[in-house]
Length: 359
View 1 (cartoon, rainbow, N blue to C red):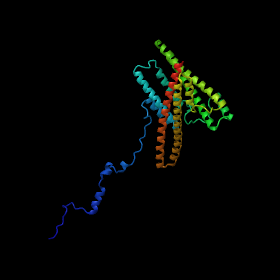
View 2: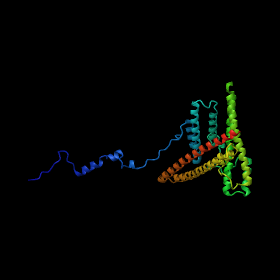
View 3: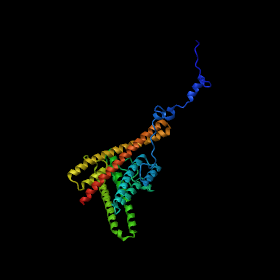
């Protein structure tokens, strides 16, 4: 019996080449919908880029951050500014809560926040007067030893120390940081003094006689802060004179200028021996934190220089890796900078309270 051949329905017979062509043209679900083996699913997504100012909740701080980025400040200064603005934002948001609860009736906390912001503006040249920028004693500074210190007394002391032969190159670097720190303190004092003058003028123009007692309380507090800063400046100048003439003592407690300042103030405050010893240990940890921050600042500066070099070469793959490393270093530097400034603020407040309790 002849075998029967199965035939396709009329009109549906397809040749093998045509069938293959149709199969190749068919859209596959994995490619169309991003299946787990597709390129879209297995290639890492590029890191999300933050918009300028996204780091801050307050509009005025967003605008300051955007302005600083447009000024093309160095990566180290930008990281420092980021930490300062974070501290400022935290303090202002806390103040808003206090105000809602009925505190700060005399406006002193608000006035202090304004003064702090003015210092930040002057420090980073965001007030329109770049010549008033302050240096940073705990970071890589754009100021070199040839830039000058802006004070004949400091210039004379520095020249004497350099030519005395009492300092090694490492000790001269350490002493230069102390001179820069002193210059920064003087500049901050001048900013606060100018702010106080403007505040006094605004109070004099106030029409309400009921505000006279509030005015006196606020101005007294402001003058008290200025006196504390001026006393610290005099103490710092005395120390620079002593070190410049005698050299560093081998038994010196600390090396970082701001830690030295805090320790000098703490020794004249109303602390018990036990409290002073605990504070000494905390200051050691704080100095180590500052050194770690300085290390990351140096790494960030080196990373920035390398990134500029890679950008000039135009190697896209190498450029992507360099940008990723730079972003990680920048984030870590900003984080450490915030922690250092927050810790410094806490230590300064505690020592200041102890000094005032004694007075």
